[in-house]
Length: 335
Image 1 (cartoon, rainbow, N blue to C red):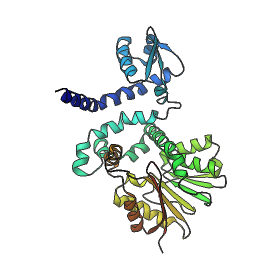
Image 2 (cartoon, rainbow, N blue to C red; image 1 turned 180 degrees about the vertical axis):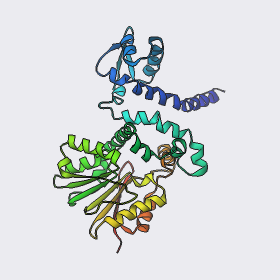
Image 3 (cartoon, helix red, strand yellow; image 1 turned 120 degrees about the vertical axis):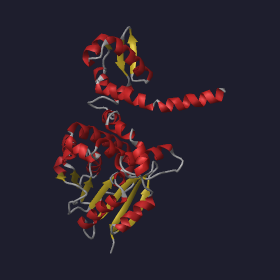
Image 4 (cartoon, rainbow, N blue to C red; image 1 turned 90 degrees about the horizontal axis):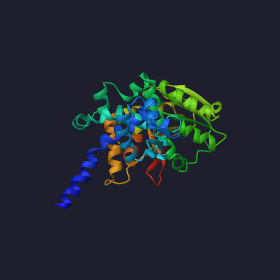
């Protein structure tokens, strides 16, 4: 009986994951991590800043204390924790992710049944448009998304840049550059490189701003466009990092064939993706299903990416996988 209660308790905790998501997302939407950044506020001061009435705010802060986001340091006085700093709008690496998780992604996962039955994007079923359309139409969503992509890229940057020698390339085209994190890392490490930063118009300006702030924009050409239609010509090395996994096989082939059309005979394409490490990994399983829910796509093995590249007119000339599963496949145009 005791073992059954323990199992039931563990399962109940898992089922309440939606509660935790909204507790955190609401804290960000009300700006609580910003308000408590580097200072202590009373519940009345925090109430005035957020618009949440004091009685309800006290109940809410109790939950945030339990999550480790807020500390009570005196009688009705509160400060943010190091975890809360990750959610700040000015510098928090998970600020954008929390907003997306509590809104756009949250609604999409509610349509998981549809994705499982149809193999189609739950996001599109829920919102009646793709995530890419939503980014183009709503600047705040685009900002949140690019900040999330920046966080993902920053975590993987050292590993990815250590898997391949980029120094010989003259001009690198970062296709689907997001916030420009990979471009910035390359230019900082290799002073002779130039970059073509290619993104959708709604996202490109975020990359331009980030690279300008980093003092690297003078070595960049910023090109707005759509991978589904055309890829800019003239680069020595083309990069597709965490792009192909966003698309089903037919669309992925379309993108790769556009790259094949643009690349010169001596050019190279790098497909950089995280490949599953184990069929028993829950993290890998959730990452794969996230691709289904958001895009109607999937994570793939290294062999599957190699097959797609071959169908698109490339031959893989080198493949290396890092310790956390990031894989770099170098591909040349097939003779």
